[in-house]
Image (cartoon, rainbow, N blue to C red):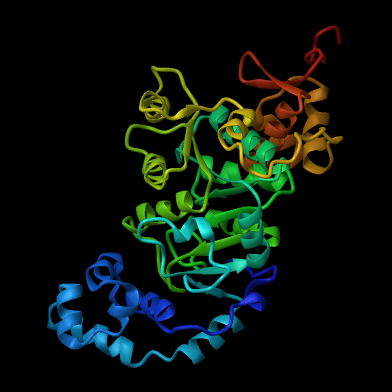
Length: 384
């Protein structure tokens, strides 16, 4: 993360009980999840205040782990930790705070607290007053899947939705990019700490998200990404949202874990149907067979979340910036993404987002051969 922007720690809640922050520290010190131990103890507060015999039983800990746990608790000083976090622009929002997301509080095993950077207060307020939609899917999507995710996110964000995803490669990144292109609020939930952006290639994207949205995690600063942390992260993605949309997912995609959490929460699940022969369609088609709603456009999501405070569908503005540059290139004649990126001097991700917005507005269409052309414009050499 190259910098922290937005309202950040300015909006930190008043000091409350120690245990939400203390258990995050204990989890970091032991490198283990404490949700099961909390349930066995009868609640997180009881776990934090456990005696040595109780801690041994509830953590199922040997002597070495137990000694480390008790030492970590004994040396923990909440006031100094809060001051240090604030100095770094990191907000810690405990589950006991009024600003803790209402939807998240209701899930099974809600995080004891969230660490956040960026415009945290803005993002949390939007979550409480707007529809919140998770868009997730494959880390290796097709170009069409990436464009659809970006276009869907842009359309939903333009109607007032908060877009939530996991900052992963592929569909997650496309969803965040689409929301940003529409000027909307998007929240990235990490499977690592907020100061350990993963993947590293998305540090710039994380910084852009923070301007009007937030990057959040339940993990203590300094926590590195480990495989088991991503399924745990997915429960938060689903838990923050009214609905979860899956765009391209294989049979064992992590996006299906997010969908499962959403179903367990009683929230809506939608999936984009795909070509049966494609491995990227296997997970989505299976979700539809099991009862998920079909998602082909933003209108499908709006229908499935009827109580959201939806804004009217946008009237497409004239393209500006990168979008206008891409439109100008394809207006001269159909071009592929590589050619557009080279001519415009922008990244492939920026090309994908711009094309998605232009397709959504009906200004650009995909043509045979994987090229894109402006609607109603003849190709290079056609009558030249």
